[in-house]
Image (tube, rainbow over all chains, first blue to last red; front, side, top):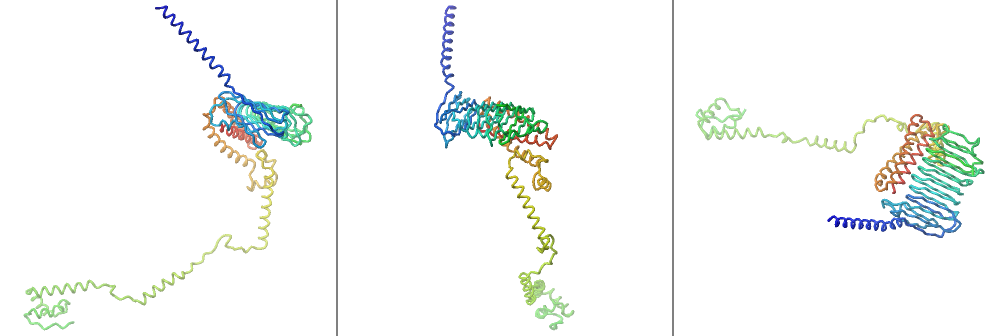
Length: 255
Length: 252
């Protein structure tokens, strides 16, 4: 009797093991396939505009030397719908609208390549935004809540970077008659610009009062409100830079 | 007095009936009247006839209406005519003395008219200047960041007479508008919030708490120093950030 029970127990254990292994092997490829990939290339003029409104995920935009826009997206489960549109020289990707009322949607990580002269307007609710090697009319990057903004090798006349909690780093040229605005709730704002730039500056850090002008400090710069704000002019002041960091620091670096 | 019919001491029915009318009028001689009474007591037909006569006479006395008196038609027509004329031509009311500016009419002197024209021209010019300045400097940031010290003399004058707002008044008005907008978007977010995933909710709450923390600090600072325009400007910026955060998360 004991022998029979032992055989039955062994048989049950073997079956259970096989069943568990089957489940693991069956679902493992499904998990790997859960991250889908979207890729599409659009022919574009030199001054194409990219408008991207993402929900969550990292967005990377790079300028390249081709008259086309390449959109690659990596979609985590539950996968979001991606439906780019081309309207009058504008490539529009609106992940918010395309996935409205869908409940939980996974991250979508974009890597987009645009002509160097393209203008870029990107927004996301959560996630990092990276833009590099772009010299179009404007670059705008906005994160509604958490995320870092990194703008490198930018040569645009109008630049705006805005986030909630996170750092902002700008490395680029300051054009004549340009306007540059950087605002954050909490984080570090670091601006790396050429020393031959000329601009009027309003930099405000009311909480930390940490405003470091570095090489750009001169007698034309004045401090107000017990060090909460610095205003002044560098060079002939032909462009304007406005920086506001509610609970973080501001620093200028010489390029 | 009527002449009664001659009666016999023992009056018969014919004599009685001839004197009934005079008897009922009380104008009959007492002797004859006594004889009639004696007869009426003994003669039922005559008594009945006397009674009928008496009822008729009584009813005639009581039923004589006053309206039977013919009206004075001339007087009546005069009254009607007066009434009609009073409706066509009402009597003029007694004139009350007029009061106020208009009662004086428009009979202004030349100096008064000139002063009025100059005053209108001056006010129009001031309003035009202010309008142009506001048109070319309309940004909220500039406006809310302005302090009493940065106001021009003209603006200070206009503020004092109430033509334009002071920077503090403008800030308070703007904050009320922002709070109303925030209340609207907060409600929208509450309706949508259950559809977000946990990571989205955490990020939203973290940023909203940070904003509210800053708002509380600035509120305390402004209470301590209402003329701190830089804090007022920061408050305005943070309120805008809060509006943006709520609006941008309400469409998820």
